[in-house]
Amino acid sequence: MGDYLHYFFFSVYPYIALTVFLLGSLARFDRGQYTWKSDSSQLLKRGSLRLGSNLFHLGIISLFFTHLVGLLTPPAVYHAFGVTTAFKQQMAIIVGAILGLVCLAGLLILIWRRWSEPRLRATSRPSDWLTLIWILIVLSLGLLSILTSRQHTDGELMVSLGDWAQHIVTFRSGAADLIAGAPWVYQVHMVLGMTLFVIFPFTRLVHVWSGFASVGYLGRAWQLVRSR
Image (cartoon, rainbow, N blue to C red; front, side):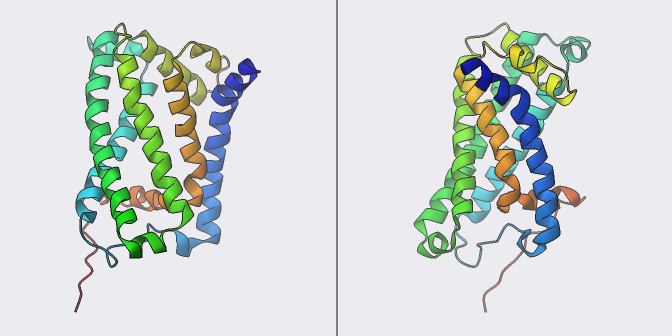
C-alpha cells in the first residue's frame, strides 16, 4: 500500500495539482471575475499590515523562484561554472533559511493581525484561514527540512530532488523512484506544497496571477485609503 501511495503522490499527483491549478484558475477568472482580488483589509485595521505584507510577499515570491531555479537546473549547468554540488546545497540552506524566516515573520504578523482584530476575524472566510494555516505548515516543514539537509553535506539529496522535479516537468517515468529514500520531512513538505496549488484557484491566492500579469508589479504604488 505504501508503495502505491508513494507512486501516486510523486508520479501522478503533481499532474493532478497542476491541472487543477491551471484549469481552476481559468474557470475562476471566467465565472467569478469580481472575486479575483485579495480583499484588502486596510480599512478594518492598518497597523502592521505594511510590515507583515512586505515581509510575507518578499519571502514567498523569492522562495518560489529559488525553488524553481534550484530544482530545475541540471548539475551540469552549475558544474560548468565551477559550482560544486556541495557548495550549491550550502547556498540553498543559507538562502532558504533567510528567506524562510523572512516569510515566516511576515506570515505570523498577518495571522496575528487577522486573529487579534475582531472586525477582521469576523469578516475572514474559512478559505482565508485555510490559506494562511496551510502556508504556515508548508513553510514550517521547509524550515525543518534544513536541519535534515545539514546531515547530507554531499548534496546528493538535493540532486535527487532536482532529478525528480526535472522528470516531472519533462514527463519522464520513474520520478517517484528517485526520492523513495528521501526523509519524511521532504516528502510531506512536497505533498503539502503541491496541494497548495490545488487550493490556489479557490482562495484569494488567485490575485497572484494579476500581480505577475502586471509589468510594474514590484514597483507599483500602494493603494492608499484615507479617512475623512
